[in-house]
Image (cartoon, rainbow, N blue to C red; front, side, top):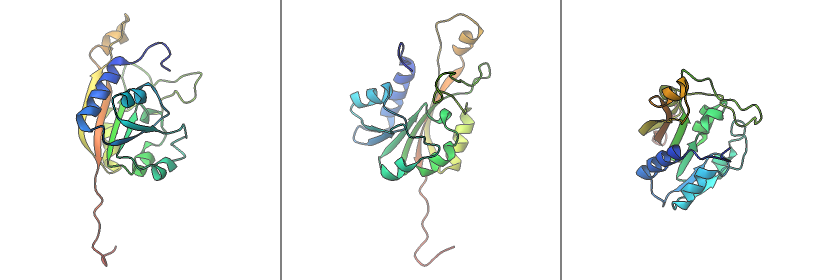
Amino acid sequence: MYEKTFPNKRFKHTLEFLKKHISTDETILDLGVENPFSKIMKSEGFAVKNTTGEDLDTDQTVFSNERQDVVTAFEIFEHLLNPFTILKEIKSDKLFISIPMRLWFSPAYRSKTDMWDRHYHEFEDWQLDWLLEKTGWKIIDREKWTNPVKKFGLRPLLRKFTNRYYIVYAEKIPTPTLPEGKGA
């Protein structure tokens, strides 16, 4: 995917946002196979373990088998058919998600050659916020940024001032426990 170029601006923003909220003492489960950004996190001193390429829509055993302090999902949720189930299965108390935002002037991305490189969801910020709320997460911080490209045309012009990326730091809302002997 990144054979020729790296999304340097996105990586820089994401790393700064991560460092703003967690320390390198906390362990990270990064959803998705090892990638250039997980390597950057490791080089910055974070203890990162990646998933192994399993289809998270149908196999969430990683969340039962791995108990890390933090889960990161950078540019992953738009590829999933059912992010609701995954968000409910996460056992960690801290979560970072970044997504490319839905742009009114650009259709959802779909690679014609790579079945995994397709966007099923193109979120607006409120949709991701609502999904997190419905699955028991409280948003602590969020940021958006643009992704200008060095090309000519209407879309490149619009990308100069239209936010393209959205990142969220959320914490799991504790589930209240009933006193012993009190049940539903």
